[in-house]
Length: 137
Image (cartoon, rainbow, N blue to C red; front, side):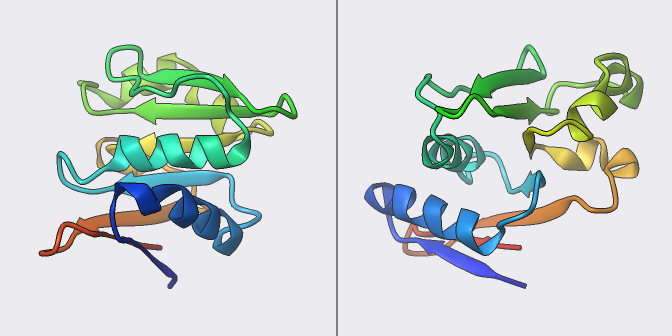
Protein backbone atom coordinates (compact mmCIF):
# COMPACT_ATOMS: atom_id res chain seq x y z
CA UNK A 1 0.00 0.00 0.00
CA UNK A 2 1.31 3.47 -0.92
CA UNK A 3 0.96 6.80 0.79
CA UNK A 4 1.26 10.46 -0.23
CA UNK A 5 0.95 13.41 2.15
CA UNK A 6 -0.45 16.77 1.04
CA UNK A 7 0.94 19.28 3.54
CA UNK A 8 -1.26 22.17 2.39
CA UNK A 9 -3.05 23.45 -0.70
CA UNK A 10 0.20 24.84 -2.13
CA UNK A 11 1.63 21.29 -1.97
CA UNK A 12 -1.20 19.62 -3.89
CA UNK A 13 0.33 19.75 -7.39
CA UNK A 14 3.54 18.10 -6.16
CA UNK A 15 1.49 15.44 -4.36
CA UNK A 16 -0.62 14.79 -7.48
CA UNK A 17 2.49 14.20 -9.60
CA UNK A 18 3.95 11.88 -6.95
CA UNK A 19 0.67 9.96 -6.73
CA UNK A 20 0.52 9.49 -10.51
CA UNK A 21 4.12 8.26 -10.58
CA UNK A 22 3.41 5.77 -7.78
CA UNK A 23 0.23 4.52 -9.49
CA UNK A 24 1.55 4.45 -13.06
CA UNK A 25 -0.37 1.95 -15.17
CA UNK A 26 -3.61 2.32 -13.22
CA UNK A 27 -6.72 3.62 -14.98
CA UNK A 28 -9.59 3.12 -12.54
CA UNK A 29 -9.35 5.14 -9.33
CA UNK A 30 -12.00 5.10 -6.59
CA UNK A 31 -11.59 7.98 -4.10
CA UNK A 32 -13.02 7.45 -0.62
CA UNK A 33 -13.20 10.18 1.99
CA UNK A 34 -15.61 12.14 4.09
CA UNK A 35 -17.42 15.23 2.83
CA UNK A 36 -14.84 18.01 2.63
CA UNK A 37 -11.83 15.68 2.67
CA UNK A 38 -10.65 17.10 -0.65
CA UNK A 39 -11.60 14.47 -3.22
CA UNK A 40 -12.59 16.98 -5.91
CA UNK A 41 -9.64 19.24 -5.14
CA UNK A 42 -7.20 16.33 -5.43
CA UNK A 43 -8.82 15.06 -8.63
CA UNK A 44 -8.48 18.60 -10.07
CA UNK A 45 -4.75 18.50 -9.27
CA UNK A 46 -4.48 15.04 -10.86
CA UNK A 47 -6.13 16.34 -14.01
CA UNK A 48 -3.69 19.28 -14.17
CA UNK A 49 -0.79 16.86 -13.71
CA UNK A 50 -2.16 14.81 -16.62
CA UNK A 51 -2.26 17.89 -18.87
CA UNK A 52 -5.91 18.96 -18.62
CA UNK A 53 -6.16 22.68 -19.29
CA UNK A 54 -9.92 23.06 -18.75
CA UNK A 55 -11.34 23.93 -15.35
CA UNK A 56 -12.19 20.76 -13.45
CA UNK A 57 -15.36 20.73 -11.38
CA UNK A 58 -17.36 18.08 -9.59
CA UNK A 59 -19.93 16.36 -11.80
CA UNK A 60 -22.36 16.17 -8.87
CA UNK A 61 -25.48 16.68 -11.00
CA UNK A 62 -24.28 15.22 -14.30
CA UNK A 63 -22.58 12.12 -12.79
CA UNK A 64 -19.65 12.35 -15.24
CA UNK A 65 -17.47 15.07 -16.77
CA UNK A 66 -15.03 14.34 -19.56
CA UNK A 67 -11.75 16.21 -19.90
CA UNK A 68 -9.11 16.02 -22.62
CA UNK A 69 -5.42 16.12 -21.80
CA UNK A 70 -2.93 18.09 -23.90
CA UNK A 71 -2.22 14.78 -25.70
CA UNK A 72 -5.99 14.38 -26.36
CA UNK A 73 -6.36 11.49 -23.94
CA UNK A 74 -9.67 11.31 -22.08
CA UNK A 75 -10.16 11.56 -18.35
CA UNK A 76 -13.58 10.75 -16.92
CA UNK A 77 -14.49 12.26 -13.56
CA UNK A 78 -17.46 10.64 -11.82
CA UNK A 79 -19.39 11.75 -8.76
CA UNK A 80 -21.85 9.13 -7.54
CA UNK A 81 -23.01 11.10 -4.48
CA UNK A 82 -26.51 11.85 -5.80
CA UNK A 83 -27.32 8.54 -7.46
CA UNK A 84 -30.28 6.66 -6.07
CA UNK A 85 -29.64 3.26 -7.64
CA UNK A 86 -27.03 1.21 -9.44
CA UNK A 87 -29.39 1.22 -12.44
CA UNK A 88 -28.69 4.96 -12.98
CA UNK A 89 -24.98 4.23 -13.33
CA UNK A 90 -25.54 1.26 -15.61
CA UNK A 91 -27.89 3.36 -17.76
CA UNK A 92 -25.18 5.96 -18.46
CA UNK A 93 -23.04 3.16 -19.91
CA UNK A 94 -20.51 3.05 -17.08
CA UNK A 95 -18.78 -0.04 -18.46
CA UNK A 96 -17.95 1.80 -21.68
CA UNK A 97 -16.11 4.42 -19.63
CA UNK A 98 -14.41 1.89 -17.36
CA UNK A 99 -13.13 -0.21 -20.23
CA UNK A 100 -12.15 2.67 -22.52
CA UNK A 101 -8.59 3.93 -22.89
CA UNK A 102 -9.30 6.88 -20.58
CA UNK A 103 -8.53 7.28 -16.90
CA UNK A 104 -11.54 7.19 -14.58
CA UNK A 105 -11.50 9.17 -11.33
CA UNK A 106 -14.53 8.31 -9.17
CA UNK A 107 -15.89 10.13 -6.13
CA UNK A 108 -18.28 8.41 -3.69
CA UNK A 109 -17.54 4.93 -5.11
CA UNK A 110 -19.15 3.31 -2.07
CA UNK A 111 -22.47 3.98 -3.83
CA UNK A 112 -21.45 1.59 -6.64
CA UNK A 113 -19.06 -0.69 -4.76
CA UNK A 114 -20.89 -3.84 -5.82
CA UNK A 115 -20.18 -3.21 -9.53
CA UNK A 116 -16.67 -1.71 -9.38
CA UNK A 117 -14.25 -3.68 -11.52
CA UNK A 118 -11.81 -5.83 -9.56
CA UNK A 119 -8.81 -3.88 -10.86
CA UNK A 120 -10.07 -0.57 -9.41
CA UNK A 121 -7.45 1.17 -7.27
CA UNK A 122 -9.04 2.20 -3.98
CA UNK A 123 -7.72 5.52 -2.70
CA UNK A 124 -8.50 6.79 0.81
CA UNK A 125 -8.20 10.49 1.68
CA UNK A 126 -7.98 11.32 5.37
CA UNK A 127 -7.84 14.77 6.96
CA UNK A 128 -5.15 14.88 9.62
CA UNK A 129 -5.29 16.96 12.82
CA UNK A 130 -2.89 19.55 11.40
CA UNK A 131 -5.10 20.02 8.29
CA UNK A 132 -2.84 18.03 5.97
CA UNK A 133 -4.29 15.22 3.89
CA UNK A 134 -3.09 11.64 3.79
CA UNK A 135 -3.68 9.75 0.55
CA UNK A 136 -3.43 5.95 0.98
CA UNK A 137 -3.81 3.38 -1.76
